[in-house]
Every structure is written in structure tokens, then in C-alpha cells.
Length: 172
Length: 172
DNA sequence: CTCCTTGGTTGTGCATCACAACTGGTTGCG
DNA sequence: CGCAACCAGTTGTGATGCACAACCAAGGAG
Image (cartoon, rainbow over all chains, first blue to last red; front, side, top):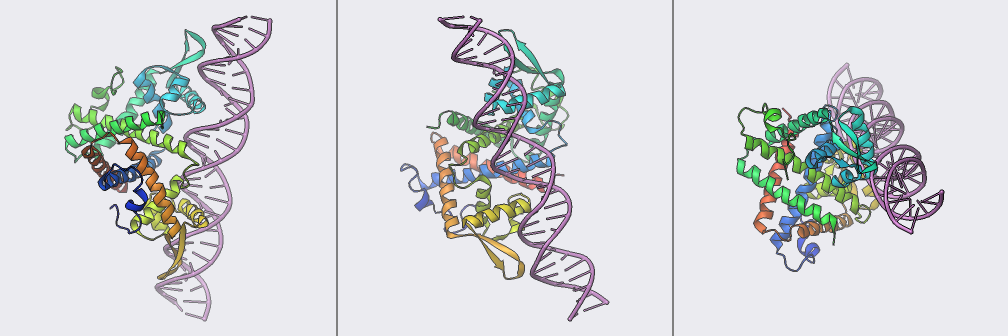
């Protein structure tokens, strides 16, 4: 599936100067991984598109609730940073979720201007339901996989995410 | 990193009715995978954001070129289907790429109204460069990984993509 | 009291994309 | 031959999601 088209891959000429100390196999692996990552993003995007409307928790809102349930209550700016989003974006989404009654603004006792954000009981419930829905989908997709493979994928993907995340902190 | 917040996971009560024949471990794995997938999408999205402008090949254009170099020349509709996008979107993007001289419209000999799309030499060159750039990034991210792990990740991710893709064809 | 810092919100504009309506070439049937 | 159904592709329109920047408001230092 990778390099059936001549002149396309051009590994040697184009990629040859990437790093002196990596083999052609290394390059091929990295190249494939890039390919699959792009494909995954496309596929998930498309999947989200299809489920729009039927799932009550929109994608972005989901990220907010997930972050808050993971780390506990956060201030708006901290939340924005946690999900790698702009504070303005988070602000609007928070307003929305507060309007739905899924999120609660509590005054920070230590700083009057700050708001600490936390999911309400209803927020927790809705989020858990959405999460279950997602998990159900994953289970369906992986129904024929041996458990070890699933675990391995999770493990490697987690590590990859960590690499990516830390890289974004210091691109150098 | 997963379930440190009590009351959040709620695997047993919430996810208990997913499938009778899967263990709690299965659930936890699937749940984690869902989490990591969402995280990955977010991270890659953010990364794209940062590189916007410096990379000459925009994300969508990249997908077009990738599909064409993979499968060979395609008609517009076939291309749209290949990348899971709307024909209208593809049409505009194609116009853009043709304007840049990276894509070529050839009349289909078998059907006068159809256009077969193929990258130009320059298109191939630009795409290869972008691809090399991406590969370089992946190599950097995985520089400390053993090669076997990289291979395993690619393998499992490819399979996962295949599952997802075929699932989208027939959601039932 | 004043100025500066900091947390958060709103204004504005851009980019992406899908749905739907439309144009024009193609083929089949009377 | 000519009209009708059809199909490939394009354009109009609107929705969405997001970031940058300007803007308020609440501390805190002097």
C-alpha cells in the first residue's frame, strides 16, 4: 500500500538528508506512520461529521468535560492550556456548557476575579454517557482483536501522544 | 493517567451494559483507547495550526496529492470518495491546485465530460517535499523508540484505520 | 490613589466544509 | 434526428469552529 507509484516515494533522493544515522527501514516506518496518522485524522473527522447532532455532547464540549473530570476543577486559562486551545474559545464553550447546566462556575476563594470550573452532577452524567458511547464504538471496532494487541496499541499510542505533546512544548 | 478521579470512570455502572461478553479490562482498554484517540486528534490539530503558512502544502491539498500518488490518476468524484470528502470540496481544492500548477486535468478518453486528475511533475516534487517534512517530524518524535515498537505502532494503527474505514461503510 | 499586572470576555475575521441548486456533456429511446 | 433522463463537475449559500486582538474588571505594588 505504501510505495507502488514510482517516483512518488523518492525516499533516497528526498529523504536521504533527513538524518545520517537512520536506515531506509527507519524512514519507511516513519513515512508510513505519518501516512496512517493523517488517515486516522481524516477518518475520525469524517466519523464526527456523521454523528453530529445525534450525540448531545459536541466534540469541543467533550474535551472540556474530559479535561475537568481528569484533573479536577480548573480555572479557565488553565483549562485552555490543558486542552491546547485558545482562552477565548474556551470562554465561549464554557458559557455554553454553563447554559446547559453541565458546568458550574465557582468563585475562586483566593482570587475574586477567577472562576473555578467544575462539572455539575448532570454534567458528569452526560459526559459519562458520551464516553460510554465512544467506548462502545471502540469495542465494536476492535471486537475481533486479541486483547494483547488492543493493549499494545493503547500503550504505544499513549506514548506517542506524550512525545508529541512534549515536543510541542519545546519544538527545538 | 487514566482514572485518578473517582466517580469519573464509573465503568461498572455506566459501561456495564455495553456487551455482556467483555471483561472490565476490555472496557478499560477500549475506554483508554478512545481517550488517546481524542487526544491524538487534538494534538495533531494543534500541530497543524502551528505549521500553517510555513508549509506550502495545506492539509487538504496534501490529502489530494497523497491520494493521487497512491492510487494513480482519478476522476474528481472518485477522488472525493477516496478521501472521504464532498465532491464540491474536492472540486474547489482541485481548482486551487491546478492554479498552482501542481495538478493537471486531463480529458478522460472514455467520457468527454470527465476530467482525470493527476499531479504534475512539480506537484510530485512539492508533495514529496511536504512528505519528507512530515517524516522528519515523525522521526524526531520517535528518535528514542526501538524500531520494533515503531513498527508495531504502524502495524496496529494501520489495522485500526482499516477497521474504522470499513465500519464507516456499513455502520451496522 | 494610581499604575501595572492578570483573568476573562467579546469583536472580528478567516478557514474549512457540506448541502443543495445549477450547468453542460452523454446516452438511450421514440 | 431529437427529446428526455442522466451523470460529472461546479458554484451559491450557510454553518461551524477557531484564533488574534481589543477590551473590561479585579487584584496588588508603590
